[in-house]
Image (tube, rainbow, N blue to C red):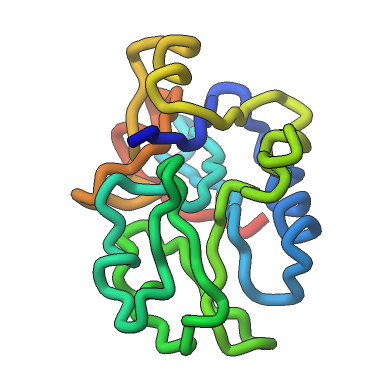
Amino acid sequence: MTRIGFYYDQTRCAGCKTCQVACKDKNRLGIGPVLRKVTSHQVGAYPAVKMYHVSASCNHCDAPACMAKCPTGAIAKNDDGTVVRDAEACIGCSTCVNACPFGHPAIDETTGLSVKCDGCAAWREAGYLPACVEACPYRALDFGDVDELAAKYGADLVHTLPAIGEGDTGPSTQIKARPVALTDAGAPLVL
């Protein structure tokens, strides 16, 4: 089975949230759910303070906990490896939200159903990259076959960061991390 996912170059990310806004716009999400979330983190204390940003969405895991726990089978894996949600089968029970160790599915308060990133499947079928990737002004995001992403961007990539969370689900995300982000989640900042 093909395995696709996101590449995130944290060393290029300025925390501008353009990817987050593009995702909300493309998915027509109102106030509340965010499918790609940008957070900023502070590490250390004066005078040795460091800050970094994290842009994260569904990791399209190899063994997704959200899919394993969904009582109605509303979450499944496509042939390309993306983890998708069937709106017709979803009952809004929040099981997927609670099961994901990375906190990515969310409940849309308007519909009462869960929502999650599907890698902009319809856009990809039309020949585009996901909205977040297309919108990033710093080209900190990419999307594709995980083996091809690793070959393109280098072998020093990680699949998760302390600020994103830990899980044994086999995340497909490839991250070029800032060294400070590998050691400490830091204090989340509200910007």
